[in-house]
Amino acid sequence: MKKLFLLLLLSLGFIGSAFADINDAEDAYESGDYKTAFQEFLVLARKGDSLAQSWVGYLYDHGQGIAENDTQAVHWYKKAADQGSAYSQNALGLMYEMGHGIPKNYTQAVHWYRKAAN
Image (cartoon, rainbow, N blue to C red; front, side, top):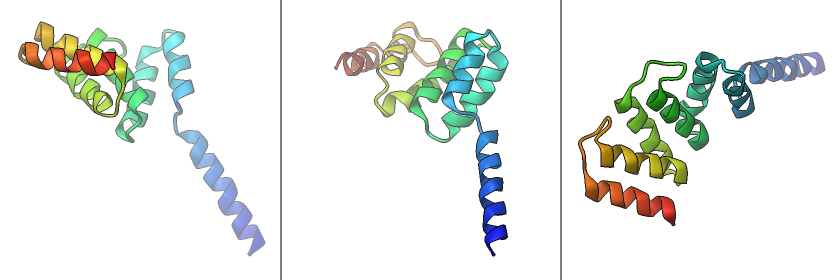
């Protein structure tokens, strides 16, 4: 039974290390490997990590590691903004102000800029 338990612990450790963490994704970005960074951030973003969601929005917004897609940028910025990310709140305000990926809406732009400032 002890051997089975040890084997289970070891396999869980191996599986856990297979998942990206935010530092790995940031390291990939810093080294210019935007495609890997995008893939690693996306795994975390789908799990609800607001920092990763901001990064995914940014990468879509700037077309790094993935084709530029303002609609997807707005989607991911909104997820992070709803969790309190000031960066994403500001970015979302800009998207509303400029009409990138979403219809222009100055009321919404001001709303998100104010949230970011507070």
